[in-house]
Image (cartoon, rainbow, N blue to C red; front, side):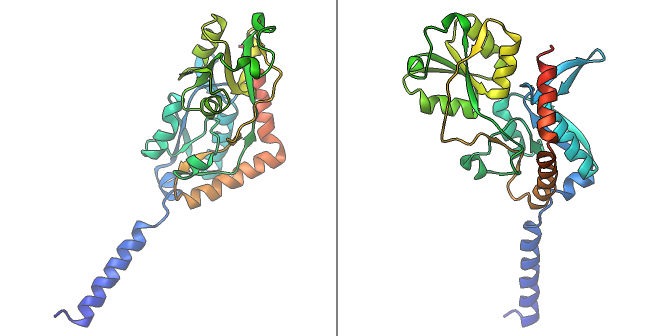
Length: 264
């Protein structure tokens, strides 16, 4: 029979191991490596997109500025990891990225797997159609059997399937390709968040926004995704988001990025 001292020692070791397993390293590991890896999809103007700056292909947008402010607050360098939108959250889940900032809607379903920051932007959804179809598509009922384009893995993909059950839903990874297919009449309509939709319409005279409201049961609040249990990191990020939103700086980031996107 083991002595009381030996048994007690084993219990302490076990307890110590358990405590170590639950330590929140979400912030400390970023501080220690000196960098914050941010997953995003760069086809999401005005939040993240590529443009030429001093002759170089550069990531710009409201989400980019938000990430930079977070990096400054944490005292680390920011590294952007560009990918298709349907891989953004997976990158955080498998540890390849520390956080994801890519116009991500903080839904209840996603919150089961990820922690989310306070919302930094709330958007509505808009439908883009060809101006040539303005007499054919006048309201939501007229689009009941239309062919809809949505970004693969986005909330708009789910909204389209929820709202337009008799329609044909085509999901692609590239927003630009969705717009190209709309312009070539391969799609009847495309569903985007309002800032993204407005940016594409501003650059394409043959497109227009349909003047209808697209409501849904899904959240339209954008938030920053991070691994579940990121208590310390979330606290830091929430403080940054709160300050940017309350000061109006976040809205300024969006407007400036929108203005830049339609100049391209």
